[in-house]
Length: 159
Image (cartoon, rainbow, N blue to C red):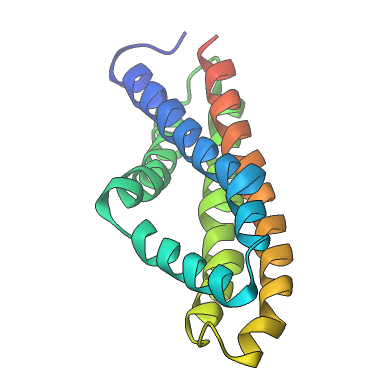
């Protein structure tokens, strides 16, 4: 059984990945649907404002901190190599680092950057908006599942 400081580290990993899954789930289930229902100029302006607001310490500490915790859990797992839970700990770390943090960098952020370069009322923004919503939301669904799965697999490692 995992104990001591390593146990605390994994519990923090569970909390972080679970919180991120919740944020992403909220976006996938109602925020993006609400924004998509707006006229394109309003949806683009609102999403751009959300993207600016997201890059603040409250969310970034949980999001990036969970990536750091996941990496640390993987490293400690390789060093300690516990008898129980090693596969789950490594899988949980990979799920979050690749499926949540990594996907954010390669799939969601580039779309956010492209959207930020558009003037909300411009014809190009109106044309890009439906594709943005569809593609961004798809990748957000994947991030949601990966983050939730990471939390679940970490829990299984402690069981």
